[in-house]
Amino acid sequence: MSLADQYLDDVYTHLGLSRANSKEKYNRLADINSELDRINSSLPKQMNVKTTGTINERLVQLALEGFMPESWYSLNDNKYQWLGDFGVQGYPLSVVISVKSFKTKERLLVSGTGSLHAPTIGWGRFDDKTEFSEKRLEAYLFRGFLAIYMPRDTLDVLSSGSKQTENFYRRPFLRSIDDFGLDMQNSCYRPDTKTGVSKLLDISRF
Image 1 (cartoon, rainbow, N blue to C red):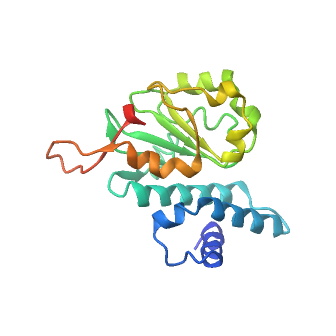
Image 2: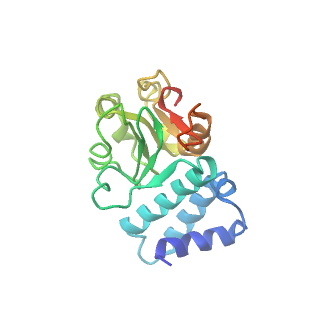
């Protein structure tokens, strides 16, 4: 078990979520993150970037397992990891999910395909409002990002212009990480084909 998984296991035990399913756990995301912050602040040396990155990937995986159980996959092959961390089968092409920790820097912007035909969704516990100016968001839109998810506390302190930014389909571009699972679920449809795919993510509804 990795250090990240040990921390999460401790959190689930403390919150009484050890026997909960993935959806139930993700629905308690705010409590999970609060407990992670408490643990982190109590450590002699705070968690390193690799550990927090793995924790955030595990949290995104909870949402995918709980709300998109049939059509997501991990991008764990080295030749694809530059794209992001997960893929979701969608129309017209798959959607890439790029998971980061607390800062976006340049790493989030350069992830994904760079194309709206196979767009990118960013997810992170971002805590720096200066990284989401209207000008900066234009670069993400140009790079084919569909949405960026962040904590409600960060989203609430952004400028009104940033918060009102829309994606290519005239839907909110910046969103709360609490809504990630439901947004994925509500944007799915079942194609009338016999391809064996039971659900696809319709990016035009996202």
